[in-house]
Length: 409
Length: 80
Image (cartoon, rainbow over all chains, first blue to last red; front, side):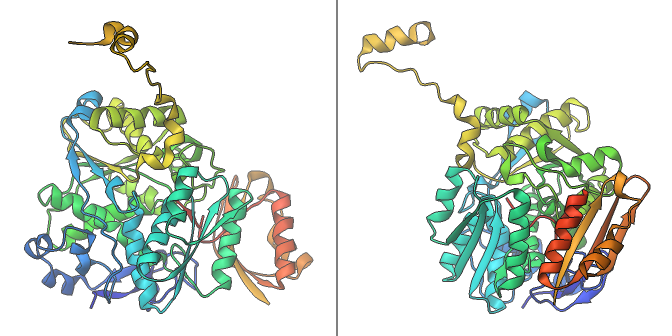
């Protein structure tokens, strides 16, 4: 049994029973899961959480599920002290939360594990999603494990590497020819027309909760404390708000001290509606047409943009955009200092972190966690220029000749 | 009859035009505003449209052609 109390409108506060719905009937604002924290606080302790499985499901009591979960081995990914990158950027206490190491190589496994569990609880036999790649792979993988049918919609220009990583799980894979807006409009209509568990539409309030586990894990891995600074990417803005919610809930439950974390949101300059609003001092996130190599975070009209903006403001954080050149350099820097090959969104985080340190927003001694949310093998095209092998004949002479002065004996 | 929930984002030059009224009159679409924020230089409106499917489609196409951005009220449903 979970501690879910209801779904609640994030704007007007109206409450709804926990069903597969995502919008308030009255003001059309998003719904979120609210809990009976009083009862939850009695059930959870540092001891019983840390004695749970080495996965996101050690935090089951803080998640909105009632039944046996659909789990392909997600979460409790490494939090590594990144001394080399820290030295490079001028930070003494930098950590990387490496969420590349989930079963389908991105943080999406966290949200999908919760959403598919709920889909099964609600009696759906088919799940669906619209995705630029990572979400689709995760939905297809979880559906395979849960013996459910899955329909995944992608834009036809999605990276090749991502298509293979989706198709291998044998979903119904639909590549939509058309603009980004066309895909959005089509999928909204599909969600209204079919009785499916649409992972990020009618199951969105539950899906969202999976990302909280990133905040929980970091706090536990740091020895039950919140970091001083968080740097994370934003597409819809949901992940960013839920890392914050995770830290906030831990504090509310008495598991960590009151949270004083500064939340820094990073986006690619070619799709930065949240950063634009932050810089303009506006509360309205004005939609943009995305144009960036960081396709996994190229969301022009972010569903949770307003809430991400609020978290950045209220926490004393900031927002930062980086160009495609900067994010590619960020991918290379992370790989070449810490041995972590992140996808383009990770390059956005590292490049954003570099700017935030250089500008003095993040101070040298502040304990900072950078969230790397997807693996680089999915977006190899962005850094294919690194492949410059030294071609030699299979002889020692050829080796010595080509290497010349480079060899250190 | 079908219902469609949408968000209109108006550029500055269209703030003064009665676009929602004309959408209702010309396309026989009932418009029901739920949330809005309109200032002198920009504005957005979240509303529900109710009518025949083809009338709603034609109405949205007309609004879009006028220069208003039309999005699903959920924001983008395509995700990473």
